[in-house]
Amino acid sequence: MSLIRRCVPLFTKSIRIHPVSVQRQKIHRYVAPTLMELKRREDKLGGKKFYPRNTYLEWNLEAELYAFGKRLNEDFDADLLLQAFTDRSYVIKEEMKQKELEFDIKMKDNRELADKGEDFINKYTQNYLEVVLPKFPLEGVKAIKTHLTSEAVLANISQHLGTKDIVLADKYPVDEYILANTFKAIVGALLEGSGEEKAAHFVRDFVITQLQGQDVNEYWPIEDPWTMLVGFVEKNGVKVEPRLIGEVGKNTLLACYRVGLYVDKKMLSSGFGETVATAKEMAAREALKQIFGTEDHMKPINFKLEGIPKPTSQARYQISAS
Image (cartoon, rainbow, N blue to C red):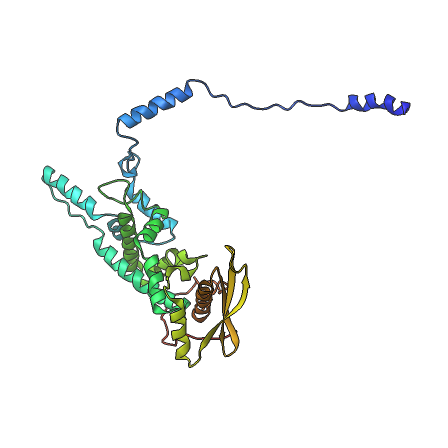
């Protein structure tokens, strides 16, 4: 014991404790009052104002359009791409300036290209969805197409492609309508300059791929799934029978019921709910997913179809009990 006491000082001397330096953030007292004063002056002048990049001295429109095409790995026609980025409001504004200066320079807006691009996007998206979702009803395909071609979705795609700072319009920042219209015009410019195949791949890569990781059933709300299921089943000459196969917490706030749907004494699907009617409805929805081939474990949508897909005329509905 005495030997240990003698050795303790030797070990403690060999261990050096280095102080930990804590770096403190030094903010001077004048920073907060200065920022508050700058904010007050900014609000007095009408708030923060955003100016388009084409008003800057170093702006080069030709270089921006060239870089835009290279970023997307597309060979756009320079004149068509410029026309695609020229909104009608900008042309009207420039024509008014020209009248004041008494000279006339004709400019083309993107309305014609936008109409061609919109028509191509709608047809291509419809055909593509019919091919990759062969069992899904046409009503559901149209609902998905309506979502993909909506103004909000196309505007979001257009903004992330970098069109917001290049588009020529009379106001800034531009709204969703101008962004979506510009994207349609870009597709129209690619369609005229490079052909249908290039335009098809462009729409596939930027529009169809918005379904990645999404549940396609959510875009088509079904009000009465049980009636729809019975209609599909009766077409095949069979009947579907609901059975209560489980219940927990009956007559309590945490009640849960499980209903199974049977076809020829084989379970087709099952669903859970706080009431028997809700469980029956959920089971019908699961059965419809099996009929349409859009179950939760469905194969991912194929985003690599080449060319313009052509849907077949085969039957779209099949029922397989499991």
